[in-house]
Amino acid sequence: MQRFSFITLMTVGVVMLSPSLASAQKIVAHRGASLDAPENTLASFRLAFEQHADAIEGDFFLTKDEQIVCIHDAKTKRTSGEEHLVAASTLEELRGLDVGVWKAPRFKGEKIPTLAEVLQVVPDGKQIYIEIKSGPEIVPHLVPVLKGSGLRPEQTIVISFNAQVIAATREKLPHIKAFWLSGFNQNKDTKAYEPTVDSLFQTLRETHAQGLDVQAHREIVTADFVKRLRDVQLEFHIWTVNDPADARHFQQLGVDSITTDRPAFLRAELNR
Image 1: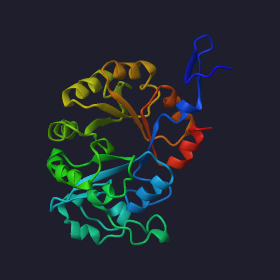
Image 2: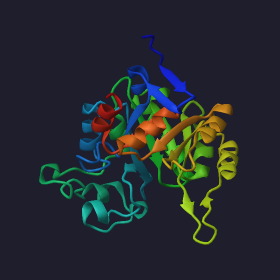
Image 3: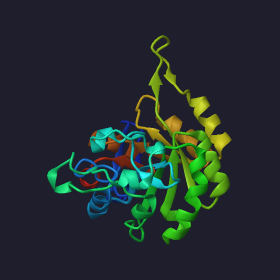
């Protein structure tokens, strides 16, 4: 039987996947291998690559003393047990916190890493998705850190829900890909989802983003939605998918990457 990488059987509406397509999508480890290790720590990022993730995704804030640190929340309480506002703290103050023991005793002593430290664990041929949680004021500080990392431009991607961050990245770091992040909220009164698809594409145009990293919402992110992205030559990425059925659905739509808390598990499921 002749093999095709992607066959759509229009008569029955079935999509068949070959092994070549099953491995085509990049697997991005959300905050590292965050199901198994404390999120946004070097332990989590190293484990993600051990689990054969194609890329890691981490969250980054600018500290009071203008250092870029890896943490998801604006405050440190959830992962450290101590309340500190990241933007109002120095790197030295944040380094005194333990952000590993909450996950398991064996991770005791894990510290909030800097962006420079995280970049050092990215192997050759792998990537990092740098999610910016601060505003555009952080972008000038990215320039020397990325330059000093030794990573090639194609290994680093900036992502953010803040459209101004994406616009500033495209201006200050034109050789680095920048994808706008978006989720969807349903209006309680109208039941319509926001932002609208048209407004999404308007923001993509205004920021000069090279792709959209979007919430994995089946009702909105349809084949027509993806075609519209492809028609304007934009990349298509989704977050955060842990269910194999959802992953296969978006795989069939030709998604460029799937962000997940379970990189090893999801890769195995997609390769079945």
